[in-house]
Image 1 (cartoon, helix red, strand yellow):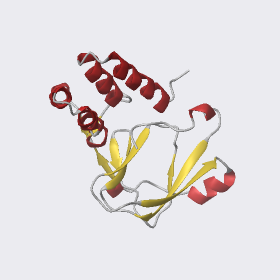
Image 2: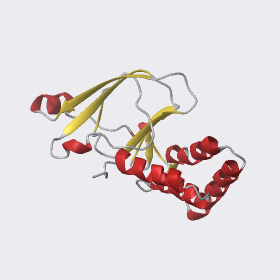
Image 3: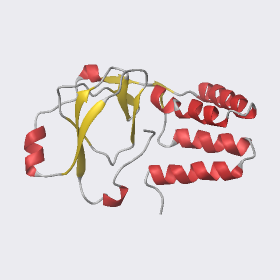
Amino acid sequence: MWEHRDYGELKSVERHRLHIPLATSSAAYMVLGGSAVHLSAGRLWRLTPTHAHGACNRYGPPRLHLILDCYSSPELAELTNGQHLPDDAVRPLLPLTDELAHQQVEQALTLARLGYHDAAEQHLLQLYFTHKLREGQVYDLLHDLHDTLGDTGTAQKWRHRKSVLLGTAS
């Protein structure tokens, strides 16, 4: 799941998402705040889905999580009291430098000009899971790619997707 924000329509209501991983691997992780976070099995993980995040399973077997969406409550606070994020669950992602971003966009342009438009988009989308990007940057790279190719319709599609997925659409 690419970068997105859930429950944009409920900004005034505090909600949490509980993940209970039943089957997972180290290749499955979430991206939160520029870090890869592996949700290991045998724990209850509380997330705030209104913050931008994404999830991937890069190379491993399928992951299976039981997911519960909850309103904030005294009972939930008691259930999650004392929980912490283990240091070994978090891996900071390397920043995407301007030079590296330029190289990646050039590679995507080459793929697109050869007719591999989906591969070009996937090439850029994967950067979200491998590098620390500013919020929405991956979508900016995608609409810039299509603007450069002269495909204004697809560029506009990515601008719209960004606004919907990150909850900035009016």
